[in-house]
Length: 318
Image (cartoon, rainbow, N blue to C red; front, top):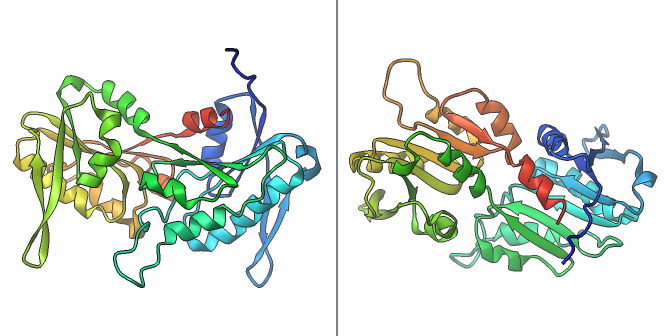
């Protein structure tokens, strides 16, 4: 069967995703960066202008978004809703991090599942001349969230795990790597993508008023253990897992998360100090799905950023 011809894509982006957008465009001559004037009126509401709007008629268009805070979602949605109406041949929305993904269920009456709220907002994106909008998201917290989206939007769930696997195979003694999951949820989410590595699983148990991390299954003695999860917030669970794994004989402990959210500069607790103290984490890998974090942790050990640019460029050709 003959492969479909690759398409020329015009890539728009929000302000904070500019660096990642440039990396995506550098992956292929078929991806051309476009610009938007991101301005505000005196009252703070957005005053936006899509440059060369008439020139995108009949062409394939994409928008690279970053919903880093509620404050930026409205202005980006305004552009996202406008682009497909400009007679584009197709429209693809790339939202590497779906920020409300971990709030996907109700535990008691009155809880608001904001993952569903954001999915409904994105499902209101108009269809283009080519049909429904394609939505590219990386390592969404729960795969069942695909059913939160309406029929006018096609979610494409991608993963950053291939980037991690490539990096692990570059390490010395890669045959002594064990993958650890901080809980059963992470194991269910990722174990099939990493099934050629030995695995250990941690769990949280309640002792009095505290929740304590314990090793549930697996052996990590004498190995370099890499904790894998979809995202990190304060990092408390990762730190507790590291302590447990080290106590069970791990020679090194590293971590990978696709989305390094790190509110309130919580990444600082992982930075290697120059005081000769033992380094808890040898490496801490993440992707560039959260642009503000990437800028903050640049050139700070143990952090290492694995870029999604190549994967996004490939997704734009689907």
